[in-house]
Length: 106
Image 1 (cartoon, rainbow, N blue to C red):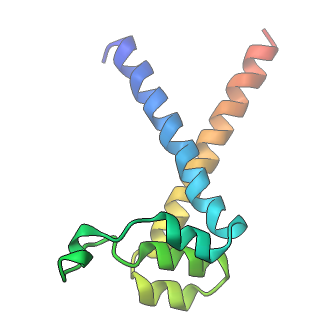
Image 2 (image 1 turned 90 degrees about the horizontal axis):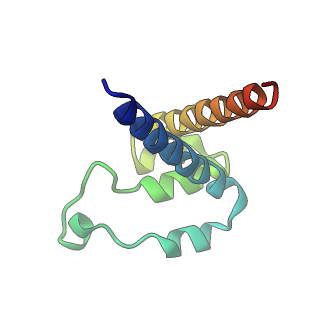
């Protein structure tokens, strides 16, 4: 792969990593009503169906309050996605910190 492509992929990963951090921290810090009010109704749900992300906002709010059973009832993949997003955020944050430390030591 070219250096430009690797750099671009790194930048995209960093952006997604910090967005992941917001998605993990928001249910812990913001009131449930504000989170549920921000996210629009899914187009599939509005049409009477569902998609694989239906119930995810409710599930993340429940995870934020410690109700893991309720989160799994809202969306079966919610806890796994939440953990994955958290790990991605930790990885992006760690990488950034290591880069800053390495740069400061040169």
